[in-house]
Length: 472
Image (tube, rainbow, N blue to C red; front, side, top):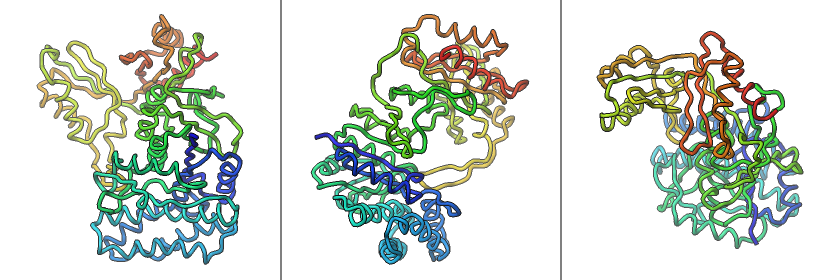
């Protein structure tokens, strides 16, 4: 039998009622085999448990002591969720003693391994208590499985671990476990047994890796939404819900603004041809959205989704005979990398190249390494432009602000003749000027750049008129 892996994030684990609903799902369907949990999310009046653990571990390392008030808030989070489910404070405190033991290991471990141990405790504490609730209160055949004991091995940086082939072989043993497996996401260990974490959002990765390892029938991801909409409901009134979308389509949309799942989490299930079912925990009988490798294309619906981003910059470099310079594009991109600037898109001509960048990339920003953070100072646009122009010996390099980018996506676009013309015409008919238009080599997406300096809502208007063209 092929089983179902079900993942529950911080929102789903932040109230007693939602935890109960999750247990109901396992009681109603014996094919649901593995429950992968995040730490408790935002309980009313309290910060998220993972945020508290990060703050506490940093203070323990810098000041020598994990603050009592932070531990108490973590305690209150768990009381708020599990006391209404029938677990006593004593039982909860027994499980939270795990965190006390981890906190005490500060001098045994390197700072990053210590961070990994303490920060990953949120998933462990919740999952241990969840298993107790399911077994002792709900009388379900459930057991907690520890990633370290089954051999969930990660390699690399302690706060940004990558799964190993050996781990996949070990995780396959979960198929043979008796009853329901309650499994914590996010944390694991290296081959020496030292604490390791996936990067932030790693519970999605954990569930995807387990799904691939056991060859799951479906990977369910339970959220607070009905599924994936074809456009942003804040821009388009009542956009359609996607019944099905391919992995490649959702990656194109996520590249711009659709934040559905951790991007890396889709890769193992995509390769294993395992569908992801995104569903609403509050409406468990609704179909949700299936993310699949292949779907049926409706000839009259070549477009499946429209995404957009505002506050973008277009950085345009011009240089005669640019095309004759081997490695010019790599050289240009290396200057952005040097300044820790992420780019969204590149379009090219024979003597010109345009790079699309979120405007916020030039502001002071947080730099992430796994779950840890640093700060990069604000970058002056004029200084950066002058530096790039001089370094590349370019004829010109200018940065234009107040732009929007619209991304039109659909597998059916490849077989739809004149689709780009339809997009251009509907924008022209509505007096929206395109500064950039580019179709990806896969032919499943079109990127449009729109100027918002005179009309701040030009990007939103573009989304609406394109949506009406293809969906209404």
